[in-house]
Image (cartoon, rainbow, N blue to C red; front, top):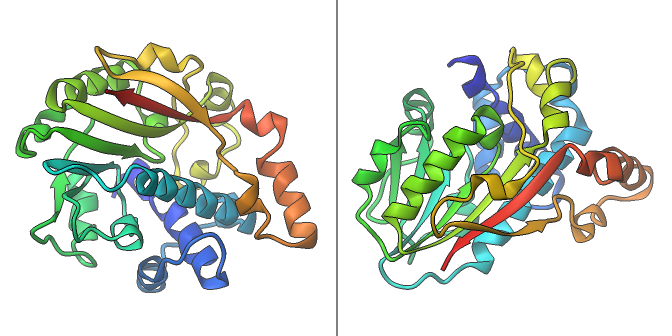
Length: 261
């Protein structure tokens, strides 16, 4: 895998770590994959504090999907940049048409642990060239989640992708985390992704810049809701709040919702 694709092991480790500890979410698939793959993370990328953050982030995205279910008939969930994430199993897809999308080499790795079904399809695709959207039958509505993706794309690339989504679906609920421009500058020197060799990332300060057509910014969400922080105890709860839920952290990392109604 290239360096950007290798970053998928950081959230995978985080979800396996918190699942094993019984915090935030239950993800036996992450535990299974991490145990078998054993990618050699080091430094900040294997910090328990970052693992807690990755676990909470995943749980927040899970909650967004659940809050937008059940979907009407002829609808779909698109998980862009799925990596090795087991959201499809954490949420379930018995009555959902679900598409997991990532680069070809990631999907090849993913297929060691997941299998396509009548309602679940893995797609080799790149946000920068969304021709793969044509493989998805045009549907009335879609829930689109982009977790840990936007920071590897320019604002123009994201805006173009929003345009492709806007043209393909009649209604959209999109959820996406973003670095700020300050975070993108700092990331060259201090970011866990540096541990797998990634130094070039991008930030967004005005979420309205990405709007395209009828797909517009609607609100900003809390990345670290108090209910999840409260699952930690004692000093861990205090330290985590200072590291990842304080005012400075909110100047670096933000969570946006977009809608097309």
